[in-house]
Amino acid sequence: MNNRTFTIIKPDAVAAGKTGRILDMMIGGGFTLRAMRMTRMSREDAEKFYAIHRDRPFFGELVDFMTSGPVVVAVLEKEDAVKSLRELAGNTDPAKAAEGTIRRLYGTNVGCNAVHASDSDENAVVESGQFFGEEMK
Ligand code: RTP
Ligand code: MG
Image (cartoon, rainbow, N blue to C red; front, side):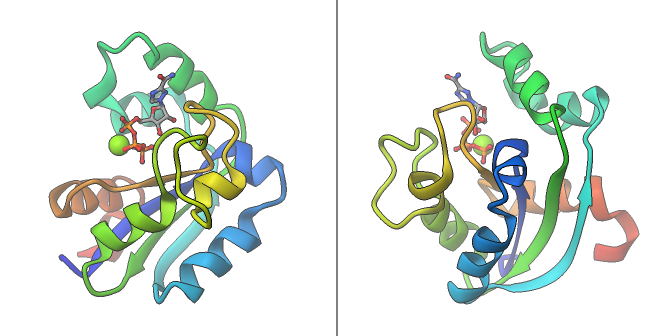
């Protein structure tokens, strides 16, 4: 599945009305949408999704943020998808993200940074599975 990755348009960007612009950047960047829906993450969803960060000091804030409003979850396809979407998303901290990246344009701070992008092919499969299950098999 190295041609697929998983993204979340986070609650800050959805609430700010940036969903369309962000999807346009992804599609304009050469990604094809393979699955997509709007949803609201439960605390259980968010704790599972970010389990790797459960011992970090920002974990509680991260779960509060990710459950604060609707998100858009999607599976995207492109050659070298994981690396390509991480580049398009930009640095975790929008202030450090390169010009023209999604986080630079639409992120607010290191916590509220507009989008998630999977960091490995393995995690892309696990994360897609959490939201799209059988559809992606
Ligand atoms: P993501 O998983 O959401 O794509 O972001 P990432 O790989 O660039 O960053 P990661 O280290 O995996 O962190 C996950 C998310 O946790 C929030 N965060 N807050 N307050 C802080 O210092 C802090 N650090 C990270 C962000 O929402 C980040 O995207
Ligand atoms: Mg990450």
